[in-house]
Length: 157
Image 1 (cartoon, one colour):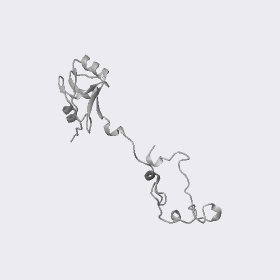
Image 2 (spheres, helix red, strand yellow):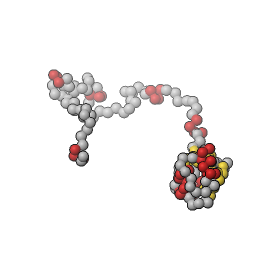
Image 3 (cartoon, one colour):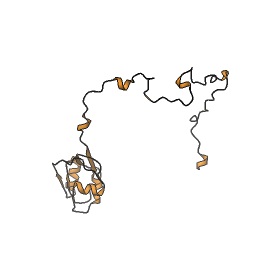
Image 4 (cartoon, one colour):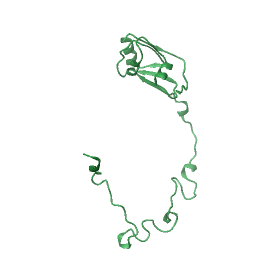
């Protein structure tokens, strides 16, 4: 099959509505624009949420209450399979994860997940470890050391 042989699925294409072709066509006279007014004019477009000058619904409703989003903790996640990039016997810290590009952006803590296999003996310093990650690190001969201090907004440059 080649590009010139591609065709849209059956029923996907519709004939365009032909406007202004006489009364009998069903699309004559006002050409499906209704009676007079703003929308009957050429070039008319009304922005979403506009209610003809009446105060729109999104401004009428009160905006109050509490939202927890401001206090949400952002956790950067690293899989065990990604840590095989480090040399055998290395000490993996948050700074080294940022340098390798395994985590970036803003986060409060780092969690190591047990996805994949760890083939090297590493000492990993992170805030959180999943149970499977801890078991796999220790079975590979490494150490999973939990750190307590907060990172708060590390940004990779």
